[in-house]
Length: 233
Ligand SMILES: *Cc1c(COP(=O)(O)O)cnc(C)c1O
Image (cartoon, protein in one colour):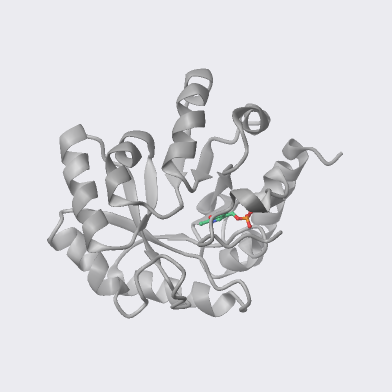
C-alpha cells in the first residue's frame, strides 16, 4: 500500500535506522513534513497519523491552510522554510513557530520588531548558502558566524539553529559537515538539513531535524515549486 501514511511511516523507520547507524537515538532527530503545494485534504491523513511538525515555504499559502487545520488538530508546529520578504514578517511571526530562513540584516530587524510588537517568539534559524549559489537564499558560509552574533547582539534575537539546502548536483555530505562546523563556531545547537533525497546522510552528519516533502506527500507539480527550493522530481 503506497499511501501517504505508509510513506510517512517508511520515512520515520529510515530515520530511526539512520540515527542508530550513526550511534544516535531516534528521538534526537525530528521530522518536518514539508506540505507545500498540498492542500488541507492531502495533509489531514498525515495529521491523523500523528505527525505534528510541518514545513511550508510560502507565507501566504501557509495562511490559507494552517489556521483551519489548527482548529481541527492540537499541537501543530509550523516551520517556515522558504525565503521571507520583510513585508511578510508580521504574518510570519503571527503564524509560524519556527522560522528557518533568517538570512539578512533587514529580516532580522523586522522580525525583532514584530516579535516585540506581537509578544510572540517563534524560534529562529539562520539559513546558510553553503554552496554559495547566486540564485539561492542564505548568508554565505564566511559571513554566517558573524551574522548569528549580530542577530543576538544587535537585534536581541536568539538563534537556535542553522539550515542549509546543498546544491542539487553536488554530494551533500561536505555541505552538511560545513553547516555542522559553522553551528559549533556560532554556538548554536540545531541543524536543519536533509530532504527526501538525502535525509539519511544528513542524520549521519548530525541533523537535528530533516525536512522531507515528496518522500511523504508524493511528487509536486513543477509549476508550484519556487526556483530557490531544491526539489527532486
Ligand atoms: C521543498 C523543500 C523541502 C522538501 O523537499 P523534498 O525533496 O520534497 O523532500 C525541504 N526544504 C526546503 C527548503 C524546501 O523548499
